[in-house]
Image (cartoon, rainbow, N blue to C red):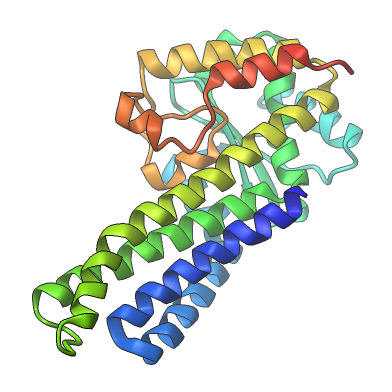
Length: 277
């Protein structure tokens, strides 16, 4: 059921992109939009992990340089029958973590220095298990593809908006009206689809991560701490990568919460506290 839902949501993003392309340049626009989606997804597949790790200045660590973190990742990866991912630390006081990589064989787990200071070993294990679950479920690639395609919709919709301003594709007003409507509706629709994908994958990673670590209450406690600290000192994060982190790294005002890539932490904690292993 989750797989069917995911395919439908990703197909919706591709469909929105091609609809925007149609209103910009007719059938040619549909073809161009399809080609753009292929190129962007290819780029996301091969380079997204390198880009995001470099963006946050993440430094790779070893068993010698960071034994507690490395051993936790290694033990949980073995338990989940996953290849050992590369392990990184970001010099950021705000506690948070993310996983990236196109598949389990080319994956990485990154945590901030802040997370190492406030979580105990069981809580850290819960967080790492959550991130390894993202790797196991291929969420790292899925989330990047969804974010890239949503970004492409916004980009092409911007072209549509300027096309409407300058009379692109006028045919008695019909296509111009379509351009205007598309420029307004498409970015919102794409964002909502991306959020639906991201939120469903977070719930899934919480559940499978709790089962992997065997400590749902420890993960719940970690989420409470991380959310509290994220509100107190938000991470200087690029909004396009916010979906990667275990808790929303951006400052949470009401509008941001409505358009958040993460489910409410309270609901995530409630689900975890009800879990019986």
